[in-house]
Image (tube, rainbow, N blue to C red; front, side, top):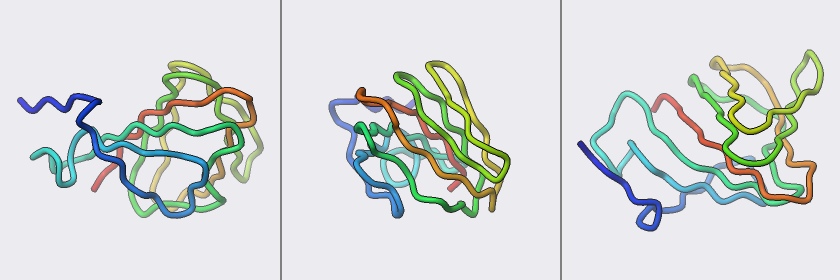
Length: 110
C-alpha cells in the first residue's frame, strides 16, 4: 500500500493546458503504480486545455465545479461526480467557464 498525502503531492506540468495546476497523486515517479497514474488538476476561472488529444486512455472525474467540454459532436458540461472517458486520439477542448475553480481527478495510462 502506498499513501500520498495531498500536502506532500508534487505539481507537474501538462502541455497545452493553461491557468491550471496539476498535482501527481499516484504512479509515474512518486509511487510504484505502473499500470496507470492519478493526478488532481485545479483549473482557475478561464483555465483549461487547448484543442488536442492524447496517445493513451484518460478518465476525468469532476470533484468540484463545472467544466465545459467541446468535441467534434458539440459542447457539454461536467459537474461534480460526472466522469468522462477519452480514448487514445480523441480530440477535445476543456474550459472552466465559471467564476469558481474546478477540481478534476485525472486517471491515465502511462
